Length: 230
Image (tube, rainbow, N blue to C red):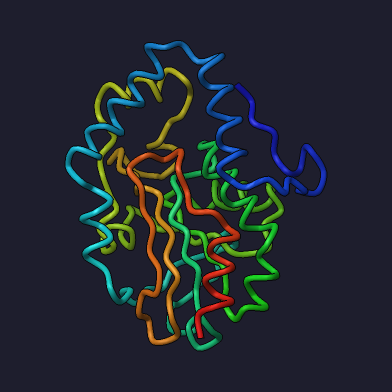
């Protein structure tokens, strides 16, 4: 199944809530993806939920660790430099191969200027290689950087990292989602998607993570939070 990108469809202008956009994608998956394949993905989600993975991750971070990571152009970006300019909206994503990550970043891109007017910068973070990150940034015409979190080292400090189960690894290989190539390592590790709003002192004002990668916070809710948070 091919997911339409913003580049292919012109400028992004889907004003629906993200949950409605995702519901449409889920309907397409239910229609076109074999039920046994869907079951493999659901089992992986269920295992993470049974371990309360997202809850544990949210409980562990009240202040973000300092970091310095390359962006999609190879430029080093540090948290200290970013925070000197204002608040941060950090979005941990899986990669350009994930239609829900693409949908989230396109929706965030649409309101990135409004987020900036509210005194914050939008930053995406992914374990994919710099080349894959560049492709994603360029293809979807993002107006904010994607940082390369090699080996999920930063995501690990947020408690977000898990290993893809064996049966899901086999499925990904069969559908040409080659994570060792995409991420540049053989760990088969990914971050669960998570979004944080970070104050200038590094403290976490808002946090959302979910074992179900098809669920993400609404961009307009993030914007509203920033506009009403003194």
